[in-house]
Length: 206
Ligand SMILES: C[S@@+](CC[C@H](N)C(=O)[O-])C[C@H]1O[C@@H](n2cnc3c(N)ncnc32)[C@H](O)[C@@H]1O
Image (cartoon, rainbow, N blue to C red; front, side, top):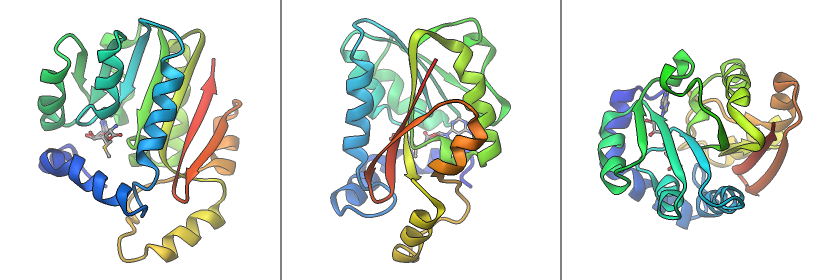
């Protein structure tokens, strides 16, 4: 599992790594642009909304929402990722924080129209993911949504097939979403929209 220092070292090359994987339609980032687009379009349904981004990285998605006039809070534990993202959205409230410790105190009293997270939550084991998502839900305004785009599969069989097909690159230290398993852990309704052979979007409503 990558530590904050690992992400610090990856920060400058991150966008290029994603682009190569997305363009060749291979694990882990096949479908990346479409996944971000789905979340962008969902988040755009309300103008000037309040958005929280968990693990915003270099800010590829967050920045687009910021430029459209949304109010952005963000959490990421890599200071180098924050250093790349913050100058491109100077008024966004970007906090350095490790989500394995829960949520930062600064945002606990806040309410959001959308809580978004792309390619970040697979760093938490499944039980911690479910507990973390349960912590996010009270931060939603009425009608608000949690939108998660990540490496994700309908079933464990789909994951195992992708693992075999991508065995040279597969990262056994990460914890990818399996929808039918997450559904029982979450105990709240969630919709899953597969986008590529290894990625998709979860939508959880308040
Ligand atoms: C693969 S990048 C995804 C970045 C961006 N959301 C995207 O879609 O391109 C994962 C991001 O999550 C952050 N991250 C991973 N584990 C984290 C943790 N425990 N707490 C806070 N941020 C974390 C990393 O620093 C990194 O910026």
